[in-house]
Image (cartoon, rainbow, N blue to C red; front, side):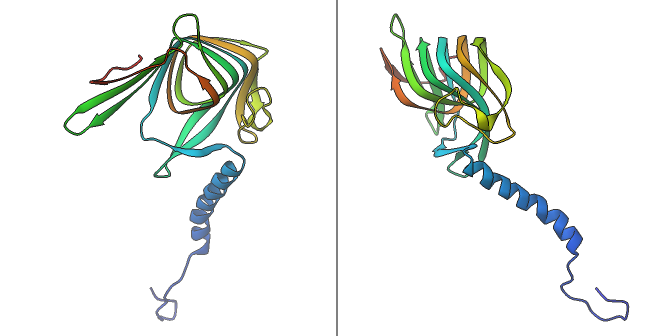
Length: 206
């Protein structure tokens, strides 16, 4: 590249073009840092590379909150999820399943069931990071469109980023629950009648 006098020009940077390319990247990095600081990213543990399925005849809960967050895996991939937080929950006829494909063996299914009969599964400070949720839901005293950073009905820490969409309710019930999730955690999880089974092939809760 030469200037108007024919001299060689080396290392010229078009600063306007550089700024146009660099600013969005810096902004994204800054936003990610802010999200981590505000608890918008569930950084408590790295999730596995597999989602699992959960089904139940019914889930009833006190203190419900829902907001968007991001999980991360061991490769630091960002996985958007809808986090559901429930202070206390009872789950009837719980089923949880995950399918792993192994070399030579093929599909191996791990299935866990609990809470059948008269004694449901009980959980306190329950968090579910879901990518899909289906069922018939009833909410009482629900607030839809609340700023996620101001949630106060769910478990402690059940808040998202400022200005982000969220909803909360005093209590809720979901029947015929079908859910796909990356992660779940709870302060206390009591599983009555727990049964775990490993089988060959693809056998899921739904």
